[in-house]
Image (cartoon, rainbow, N blue to C red):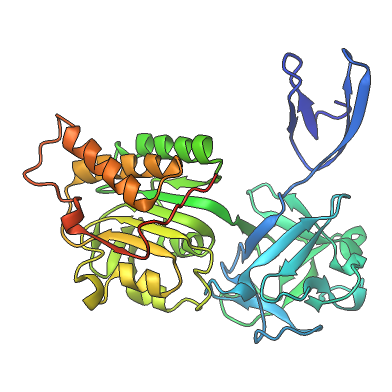
Length: 384
């Protein structure tokens, strides 16, 4: 490697590993060839942009899809106007395109201005330097989002204020390395799955092995990428539900809520989201008590998430036993990773529970008698 700060090479295997964004030359002493490698800071994909200071999200005013529309910060709703598509241009810069329209509208500096504190707005047409962005990680793990047009002056994407309130504009501002983070952004990438395995409480020692086993199966068997957590706040969970294909949890629950690390996620929280917030959700599994209580005739978490746009949602109608739910969930998820239908995965998990000799429960609380599924049981969650 011509620059090990950008990429390193394993001398035994030849594997090249990116370290930081930049361009580097890679050479082979054995086979007498070389190539130029561009290492990007961010993979192409869809993201939420959350301001590190305010915890509000980059959003489109209105939302009005027209050139010149203001881009501002807004509380999370998960709609398409808060979703942004990053595409690497091959030179270290990206376009940031709105997911709110089939027509191409980009985040850009107004009129390609090199001025300080000028507006960042929707742009259309040919890609200019005011519509090109670079990402650089800060010392605290967030990102500076750098407009190419303002890069020589040290300008970045920022909000006009540190206030936690809706409607403040995004601007091309000056970066200040201090404890006010209105000029730094936390980027949340859309991925295939999210696991939230809290268990009976935060710190449940049974949960990390289950997260590891399920994540490994989804990645190895189905080629999926995702997030695995043994703690997750309500606000973080809402973001994940709006940016994943497949969600699975083990936690305490009731008919209208499940526990998170800092409180409860309720049906009212789900109903407050944008109607398009769950348009990516293929399947949701609630490994928790009573989330399907009352089945189709009642307001419960299963019905609420399904009505918000998920293709299929599974929960339980009664209280479920902890040890049984842990085993059933693990076997169910691993079965899904092998490309079977929901129906087949449930049968496999039932069989595993019934064959476990050390499972001391008076009745099988996860059986089909106590499950409630909205959507088709022929759905295949993990497509090869």
